[in-house]
Image (cartoon, rainbow over all chains, first blue to last red; front, side):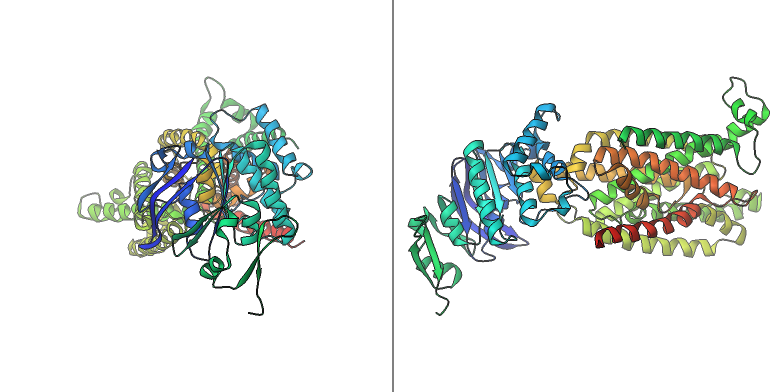
Length: 255
Length: 341
């Protein structure tokens, strides 16, 4: 359980988040949505302990994050930045192996097998010994996710995991996370730009605007044309997807 | 090729260079004299080789090893592949301290009896003075760049600014020295192993041992720190401890290298890149490989500097720049070609 209590976060004296109270369970998928600059990435970073709150606190299983060592946090929370930077010259396997940093014991044979399993689960086995820098955007994203999962944390925090990808890879990444969740059992908190992806892949949506929570709950409770109007100042028609039955927004381009 | 084979080759090259450094120089020794060095009771010629050349070889190895590892650390921690020990104000701080000391000694000496000869800075005082200057400059850079923690870019910029200011001060002071002493100052500023005594090198070994222990302890953190800071922290790296400790170790290594030989350029910049090409990106190989290649490069450069126009010698810092800079240019062109294809 990650819990934000009366959380306010400032950056250079500018208040980014004000008085956020949220709970995240280790068996749920939460999508953070909202317009650019609403503070959703800052919230994700603060939940990962990478940003210091101005007031309030984040509790990880009841312990304030500020009091925990980075290794202790890493054993519970894996975090993938929006545009993470990889060292020069690593192979895909070498990159993924860095996920084992927070484990107490040294790198052993069974870790090697664990890495192999993860690479296979992420569809990276044939690419394992290839240079990471030569991979496509989607393959690189899968490698980052594999690296995070090697942490064996109970939460996976993803900052816009699909933003830099084409539609095929976007679906591929979100399906991969969904599939991995079934075998590895971890909670997900992710920042998503696409409200329809949030609606399909998350079981809970937290909508933020100007640093405050505007609305939160299950997708079918939360998503409405008025919410989209509030968040993005855009007109949409909300309907049920004919095949998946998830709530879907279709923009009214003609206005 | 397996890494173990590569290590064997580099170590073989180091041994060969050591042997040739003992034999060759202003006066070329015979093989029998070189072998005599290892006797329990060496004869006069062998003892001369041992006293004059051995300290230089050890000094060159230590300086190269320290500068290369310091360069590697700076490149990783400041997240800039062009960072080298000179960028952190280490070289210019050491230079300024030494030149100031020379001026003070001259000012004191001119008033006393004994005149000019007494006004030279004793050589055994140079290393500790250089070390003090180097560390002061590093702390100044950190203090200037500090603003709720350390930002790589700010460190880099303030390092560059301070280096420019200090170098200006060094030049002003050097030009104010009289002609004969200008030469001495310039020899030191060029980075030279001329007339180094083993006593100049020994204190640096203790510093080095401490630094390498710290680096070994944080080697895994160092590997993770090659990612962006947020990713490294999320992996579990205690960046607020690991980064300052490693920066301190790098500055101390660079400072003790500069203390021994003066500012020897290009080793810290160049060697980590050569090492990555030869040994690949694993941090352990990069650390070990940089240490070995750094030692090899400076030992070879010192040998070349002694061989080029005996009995005169080219300061080792000049040789590393003359070999290092063109080599670096070729390296950049090659890697650009690889990227372009």
